[in-house]
Length: 124
Image 1: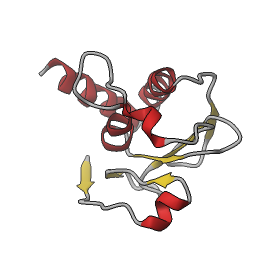
Image 2: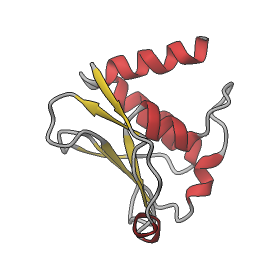
Image 3: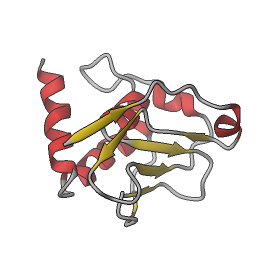
Image 4: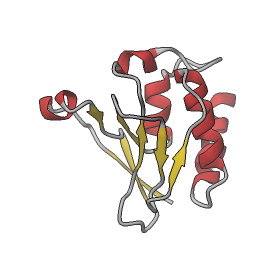
């Protein structure tokens, strides 16, 4: 698995459009090399809480480990996979959304290794 890292500075346009791009991109051969989390939350700072037992914020976990672009102020909480499949999320709290997304990704053929890698980082 190849992973491309970006030193990405947010453009004002992205922030004005409430879109926060992934911090890393995957190379799985899909047309789109990242996932999209559409959330009803209107402030990215709600994802600044720490993921349990880590120093990582929820925002960082989603955008770095799981190649997710976060789109704020949408009508519902949805994960769009790299192949375009839409998953309506049941969760509303940022930590619950994050855990639900990680569980969904763990069930994807390309995502299983991502979850393993994330869990390994938690153990280190």
